[in-house]
Amino acid sequence: MLVAENLFKSYRRHADTVKVLQGLNLSVADGEFLSIVGASGSGKSTLLHLLGTLDAPDTGTISLDGRRVDNLRSRERDALRNKTFGFVFQFYHLLPELTTLDNVLMPAFIGQSVFGWLRTRAQWRLRAEEILNRVGLGHRLRHKPRELSGGEMQRAAVARALLTRPRVLLADEPTGNLDVENGGDIVRLLRELNRDDGVTIVMVTHNLEIAAVTDRVVKMSHGQVVEDTPGSFRPRLLSAAV
Image 1 (cartoon, rainbow, N blue to C red):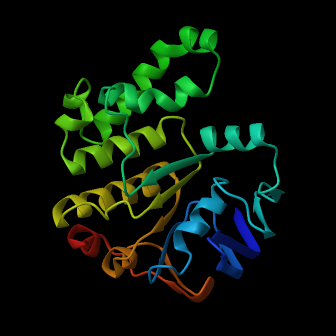
Image 2: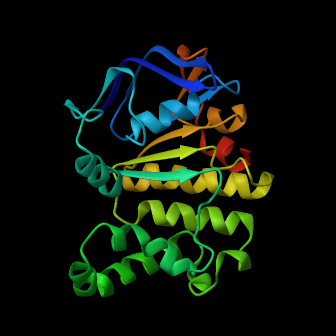
């Protein structure tokens, strides 16, 4: 479904050029739960940003269902990120002045005109409440981020990413700021969404135990894929994974 071919990506840092991705190839199957591991600086997050069209490769191509997406016009990329891709980051990026419910509603609000929002907001609100109940935050609808724990904020971020029913969820270190218990809860939630809703998930993580409970583990080094192996997902492992 999602294919990256011969990706190169570099960044300028002062007078130096930092080579991040160097001819990387990767394919992600529809409905797969894939984890990407590797040392800091190996290019994991850069790859995730390119897959989600948050950035563009210097050379190489990214295709979704056989259609190239890395060279789309800005408006087309915006629509793709709003409806097809969902994003979950290590830092929750919740707006501090908004309630949990309003934070979750943001993708719907920014994805349409003012009149479109006014016409459909009741439906979106029901959808947001449904998701928040599902992730265990039905009792936190009117709480602001400062009133939530780290685990609750990450659950709110997951709910926001799911609002528009994306096909692909891109998660960058979603347990990186969480303790063992909350980290395990987030992984179980992602596994449930993948299994029950068929959401394709690509997750960057430094935690090899978490990676092991996904369908497939890709290891990166120096901007390339150096290992690509099946995970060892078992329900009993997931219950204890951190």
